[in-house]
Image (cartoon, rainbow, N blue to C red; front, top):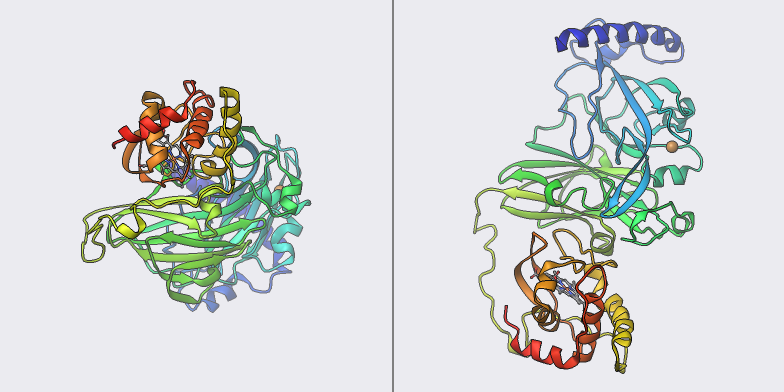
Length: 491
Ligand SMILES: [Cu+2]
């Protein structure tokens, strides 16, 4: 059933393409017959027509197995949609295909692509597309300006193999890109890419919202922040958490993994790195030159790279932009979960942990906050006031502005069952730091909270603030209670 319908569609399309072929043949330099000779391969007399398989990130269409060029029909629909930017934060994304990044397009060198751009009737803006894989004016932008409810068509021949960015180029261009209008198109070399076990699509982008990182609600675009190149969010695949928790990429020990990495920008260059892995191969800038044994590869705004590595030992590998505040504070963080057997020769795990006297503690210490003298609070209101500032200075970088934490990395303080169940234990955590596994609101965390050099007075103030904010249970903590809780803390 499915096949016969598809055949009909292909036949119908073939008729359509034939007429377009006549129109464009005078301007095209190479006829299909010539192209077939150039490939030096047994190509059928008439190029077959194929509907391109398009995928949403992190998925990639299947590798191309055909040994000849084809006419490939790509149909891409632009929509303007409200979607999640982070927990509690929404944004009106402009998309190629319904999500950010846009659909992944996979073709082969010397294919002739018939490109349809449809702009959904509900869109508020016209859009077009500039594919960096196109040789011709505007990379297609000049031929694809499409008003809402319209469709445009142009065709191009994929002359150069490589991994290319595509994006909208309608004025104001920066704003269209900043709203998520970008994706990747892979032009496989004629010989194809070497076989691997897993392929994934990861694309970075920077976003500019009126509210800073984590401020909830539907956030509008902020032109001034975009001009200042000061993003509120830097994310992989369109939102904070698009590649963490249940959305993490997966692989098995021993598998070879290929990441098609793109950067839509609009402004930032990505220092792409996978924590705990070394790229065996990087197709630098998405081109044909292979660089080996790379730790971090630069992915320019409007550029791409193909990285390959083998998962040698099990564990969680964290994808980051190694401009590291972007990773831990603005969202540019993803995860690859590798399952399988350990190999202690390659990675032993911790062998020794013991007290090293000169430093005193195995828990890392943070530098003391700059405030020279500690203001003393004489009532709860003052504690709340001072606690708020202490929180911003000492806790917010990890637990986030609204106490919401970062799933998989920093537990929430907002409505934290761990905190509300035993406040003295939480005070102990703040006073002594914490290592090891804990469960907060049903989620496991196994990480390190540093020991902070805060006085009992400061801990009393910050904990009073935390307890009276974000739906926690309230109350007042005094320095005396902190002293007691510290002494009794064990974990
Ligand atoms: Cu656009």
